[in-house]
Image 1 (cartoon, helix red, strand yellow):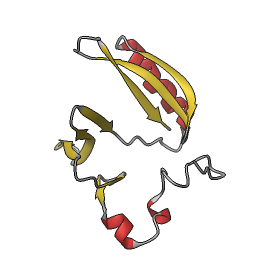
Image 2: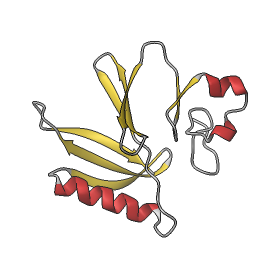
Image 3: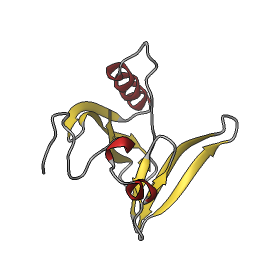
Image 4: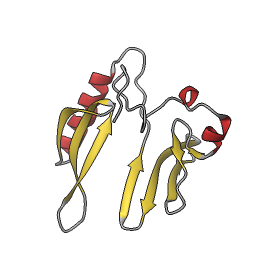
Length: 129
């Protein structure tokens, strides 16, 4: 995989909307507010919407038995992403999960096991950012 100086994949992204090139590339994506997700015929999208804030909370992309939960987070100007990752990791650990930082394709990320009601009792999760 080709990697740009920013550490992102030049073939697979992630990209900013300004890096997508043609307007058709933007139109061929689901617009989830802060996230533009490529459309795929076999994938369906379920969204959670918070009516009190008039905001999309999360989107779940489902392909057969597989699901990918997408949520966009932002850091207020007085905080950096390292502190946001630390807070997320603390919350996950406080809920009985596990979390550690690592370096992924897109840079720093959290690798976690989220407690859920399944036979295994937890699910793996990656949080880039």
